[in-house]
Image (cartoon, rainbow, N blue to C red):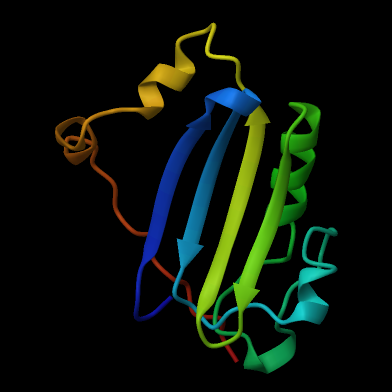
Length: 124
């Protein structure tokens, strides 16, 4: 988004043997109609000259396929004018030590360096 934020959160649902990753933004949101098709290849919310950012509509289709190959799934919750949250959910019984890493302390998380992606304007 040009304004607002993107947040990532991770949680281990030990009682369900699931690891969930949320990616949320405060963008324009995705319409109910578009939510039904955005996981299909070459589908996007916006089309034509009204689009603000480049892309061909493969990212979510690829993410969904990768999640499925790992016995997981991706779902979307969105509200127009408010933002969107994508949740990736995967089997994780904690035997590989991955789930324990999710419970990192705030100090550990503060040491992680990340930078926001640069939006690329689409030429008209």
